[in-house]
Length: 255
Image 1 (cartoon, one colour):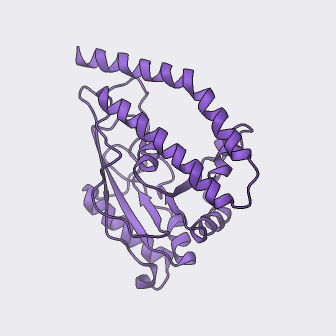
Image 2: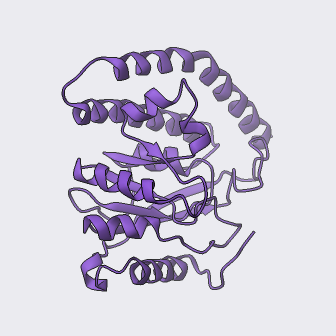
């Protein structure tokens, strides 16, 4: 009975989204096109709008027993100023959860989404940037990440490059850590504890778990690149090992 209620709530939220979203996207697009001399200030305004809407989305999901997550509460503290945020990526809603919970966050977007004509002005206006199309296509991501850090934003990167496997982690890439080393800013590891996982790598949206999933976000102490000789490889290895330890994951998983 409870699962039937949650499924009905899911369809209600989806219906509400498709009914309201065009108006929200339209208003967002108009704001992003207004001429300005300070694009960073406008980006913060647009990000604030995104954050409030993502918070509302997660409030609706919590009240509907679809996902037990409160964006107003995360464990740990983030340092002031620009940092690189790295996190495991168990579910599809990780991005909306993190952007609801944290301020001044920009992130890499899948190139196929970023290139869509009606999406790009919105993403660019909020100072989001295109991700890598393949493992060799990372130079522009590093440059864009460093530029956003110089503008005072926090840069969020999922170093696995895709959603995590069930109860595991893929090998971390070096892009996030190269950005941190180039800009010489701290890396803040984020642990996303998701139990049970919903909308994982091979899960459909209506494949609801038997019980309400619970998501908690923990910010671990910041790690400074200078402590590792500004080596992105050493920094990557340390942060990956730390996250694996916190999640209880040992070996590298590929699926």
